[in-house]
Amino acid sequence: MPPSSRTVRRSARWSTVVGIGLVAVYLFPIYWMVTASVKTQPAIRAVPPQIVPIDIDLSSWVDRVFGDPRVLRYIFNSFVVATGTMLLTLALAAPAAYALAKLRLRGKSLLMTLSLSSLMFPAIMLATPLFVIFGRLGLTDSYIGLILADTTLALPYAIVLLRPTFARIPKEFSEAARIDGCSEFGAFLRVIVPLARPGLATVAVLAFLWGWGDLVFALTLATEDSMRPVTTGLWGFFGANTSDWGGAMAFSTLAMLPPLIVFLWSQRLVVAGVTAGGIK
Image 1 (cartoon, rainbow, N blue to C red):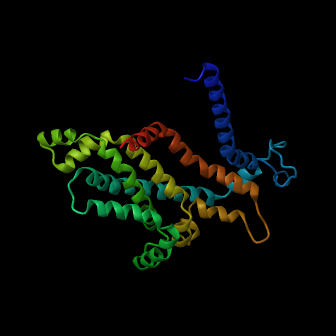
Image 2 (cartoon, helix red, strand yellow):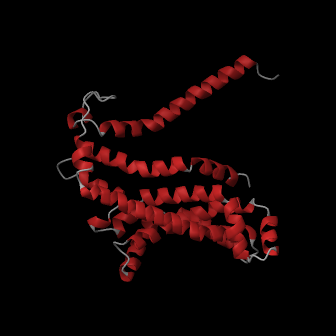
Image 3 (cartoon, one colour):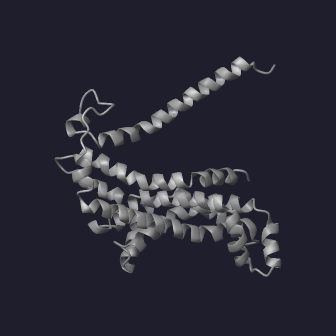
């Protein structure tokens, strides 16, 4: 027998309550980070903890964030690396995924297997070899070195995610473009790429977040303070005998804003891309 309307409403209420509870659990660390950035050091260490700040203190923002020129430099470095990783990943992953999805290639299955198998290797395994190679090429302590290193890990994910997006686009579009005089690559740029915008937006956001949040390559390839991104710049708030938790939380809050803005700006395309990629 079909469930009654009362049972359905009760199930919907419980689903809503569980969903709100899960969201609250996931967002609480962010809430704690933001509120800790406006607390004093004793208030941060208070027992029991102050869930809601009692006395607002903006000294961490004034002195340790906006008063330190290195902080904006760290933010700028991360923005350059993340943007470069995003652009390079899209430039390489889109043609590769399209070829694997639509073209008749020898060894296509082997290429897909290699792309999938590369996802099993952690970044720490590549850090030392890349440091040796980039050191000989003069790419350490440079934006190009960090962008290339982050792209090596973001690229396999991007190919795997984009391939279903291109596979679900009917081949008649590219055939019509070739009839009108376009080459295979011209049809790809003019017709296929606009149709694949949701999937490309998803990959772009993920690649940007990958480049923004990387720590392993930032530690090994950026040794000069002027080249440090936000992930390694956070270390400056902690020493052998001191820990500036207020400054660290303010710095983390500021570092969280750029990727958050990027995600909110493209969330509709990202959701559409994830949905489209899971159809086929």
